[in-house]
Structure formats: C-alpha cells, structure tokens
Image 1 (tube, rainbow, N blue to C red):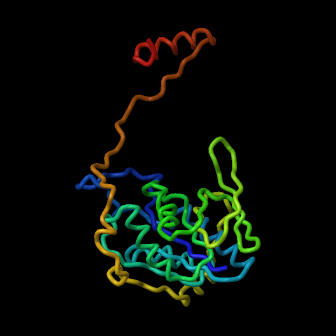
Image 2 (cartoon, rainbow, N blue to C red):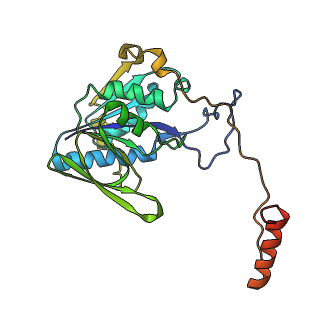
Image 3 (tube, rainbow, N blue to C red):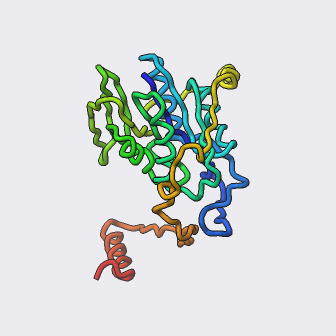
Length: 260
C-alpha cells in the first residue's frame, strides 16, 4: 500500500492581529509562526495508520521554499518514509490550479495506490487542490473522508455530508481522498522520531526540471484585493416576555428594511 500525502506549511493566525500587506494581495507573515496544516496532519496520520496495517510506504510532498521543509521533517518524524519538496520560487504567482498541476507532475511518477490531501488549507480555505489533482491524474476520488477501510484492492470510505449525514463509497484503487479532521488522533512527535527523521530521504526538485509550460501554471484566479472586514456594532440582546421580544424583533427587521 503506497500512499502519497500532499502537505502544506501555513501561518498560525487564530490569536494575532492580521495586517494586510502593502500590495493588498495578502497578509504580512514575517512575524507569524508556521505549522503543518491541520487537515494535512490528519492525512499524514491516516496514511501511516494504513501503512502499519497493510505495509507499503508513505511519501510526503510539498511545494515551497526551504522553510517549508519543516512540515516535511515533521511528516517524516511521524512515520513517513520519504519526502519531496518542489522548489517553485514565489508561490504567490500560482493559484490552486497551478499548485495542483505541479503536484500532479511529481505524483504521477511515484508509485501510489492512494493520494491524500487535506480537505482544505488553514490559510486560504479554498478546498480545491485535491479535487483538481484527481481530475488531472484521472483517478477515482472521494471528498471530506472521515473513515477508510481497505478491502480487495478497493477503499471503503465514509464521507461527511451536510446536515450530519454520511456517505459510504466503495472506490477502486488507485484513488485520491481528501481527509477531514477528526478521522483519527494524530500522534505525538517524539524526540526519537525527530532523530530518525533526520536520516530519512528528503529530495528537492526544481520546478524548471518538471517541464511544465508557463501557460499551464498561469493563474486563472486573480486576487484583486485583500481587506479586513469592517468593524460593526455588537449584538443587540432582546429581553422581556416572548410577545415583547417578537414585537421588538419585527420592529428591528422592518426598520432595517428586511421586512415591509
């Protein structure tokens, strides 16, 4: 069971004040800490669990700079067998389609039964790369997967749907699955795991060597401007008996033009 997992290094933004950069195309990241994307953390763990059950290899792949090797080293420390980084220079010049094509050019030359990506990334929340890769590779796929069982050359997957529903599918391999958080409990990275990771293969490839024409990587989606949401007033709390609350609520909606 050979599994390729696409991972991404993302900034931690939950408890910091974000500042839009001078070009108004993104946020300033110089003072931010970076970590392995949360969804990708679950994807790596699930790949290692399947390897432990069925044998095989796990390969972690990322597109980025030398700084992004941090998440590859973490993947190796968790139990991945090898890692690949594609040096692509300025990542802001690629949209999701460009990134998916870069990943596919590398993945298609690797042995794989399964390809994992996270459902989405903490930094952009696009959630498109996995499905684009499945289309580009021409393989079966399932999205938002919360459980996987391998049986007779097929993957039985459970996918999360809206409204608390789930969908069970039997998918012939090879296939690409986008992994949802909560599918497992990612393991703690030990000091011993970190030491072992230092001895594992981390291959660096240059984008120019992949032979991808510039027109295939040119963005189809252009960010016009990034801005912080405007500050608004706090919530209004309605008090009193139910009849008064209902009357006040209708009055507010009417005054704001929601109701006539």
